[in-house]
Length: 181
Image 1 (tube, rainbow, N blue to C red):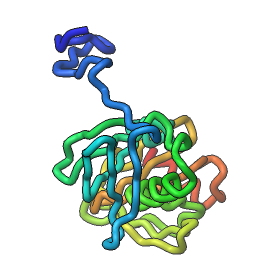
Image 2: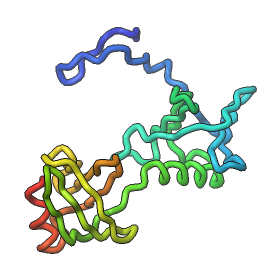
Image 3: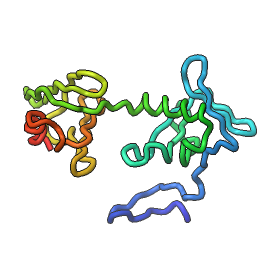
């Protein structure tokens, strides 16, 4: 496979790396550790060391434990973890902690109110992480359907909130969120 344009859903996608150019990070050659400063470091045999790496889910809503992109501090991809469960318990705990920190996303369980003012929606909600108040931009671009019933809400600061199944919300919450879907 060469580095030419591919057609996906009638759109050209340029500059995709060939599949055989993907570097997979495996427990046979790589070791994740927590630094004294609380960062995640990576050693790759025989002599590669990254004092700090960042972890990103390639498919954050469908594959939370697979295809994890490992990047250096400048954001350049070092490689991909096919599945975090292939690593030791200690390393899985380090990887999970870092991913949970990056992808912290409270689950909205109840909507107390949504007020509109000057094109913004001000939410007052109950979540699995406690009560939260946040603001989203007007329009429907901040409330995204992930499935027929699962919603992702992105506030003006880029924080994410999830409603696992909006149809299971109480009647008041359902009436407040339905116009935004």
